[in-house]
Image (cartoon, rainbow over all chains, first blue to last red):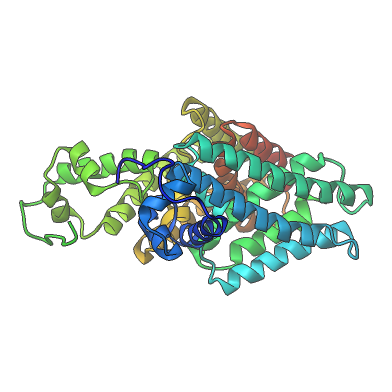
Length: 203
Length: 203
């Protein structure tokens, strides 16, 4: 299966495409990108392997779309917490991370962040995947930045550093804490993150 | 190649074993663990594939040994910087990260930390690899902790948080900054790490 059949084959159906991305999201998040063969994706989506290339030019293009879908859903969750006007911006920020810590606990501290995983596995090897990651990380950082900026405006977070700098540092530190969480198979690295970020970094 | 030939084959030679680990280190660090086949390792080391299993029970066992070797070399570098008694402990800590930032620049911000990469790729899937990572991350954290503790003793780093907590947080945040460095293909996330860690976290 070295040669992609290109754009031949059946007419693309939107639901088949969505099913492929859904299967990819689940399988790649659990097994990793390199470890996931296209065969396992098409098997899970119940379509013949050749049809994969009706929808995607390459495994890389598929990977980029899986990242985009993961990021879209995650941003939905992030906005749900960070734009909740019934709470103060700092309280929202804490609530988001607390929710994530609980969710990772339920998932036995496995899988981590799909964007972080792709960064480790594929950012060096695929321009398409790297550029998708640049775009998605930036989008997440901006949502954090906006909430931090609001908290600075209300005096809840120190203005010593710009909201953009704090957003990047906190988001990147979270990604690192998630790696260590998987190694330790424990919430401890996430708790340490919470302590330092909320009792020091933003003070 | 589903069945490992076990312990048959030629008598193990220490240099062949070291050559395999050396090849594994180079190839896995660059291509990733799942993407690296045993064939490419034995080809690079110039031995027949069957002989691989004279030295290692499995790809996992090999992966764990590659992690151990990477960590050993890295710890050597870390100790070289953090135990340099001609500088104050805080200056040593900064010098270590500055040296790493320069080295990653030379490597075009690719590859990152092999231990971080294994955490993302394989910590969920292999107990042997996860346990090796637990051990190595702990060893690194302890070297950081010892230097931070010394700096606290000399009043260079605040005692607000324990040296162990600071060491874990700083090390994990560094791992996260390395992921983002690869995405951005830039030192910017490492510079942001330096700014927040040295101008805030340890103050």
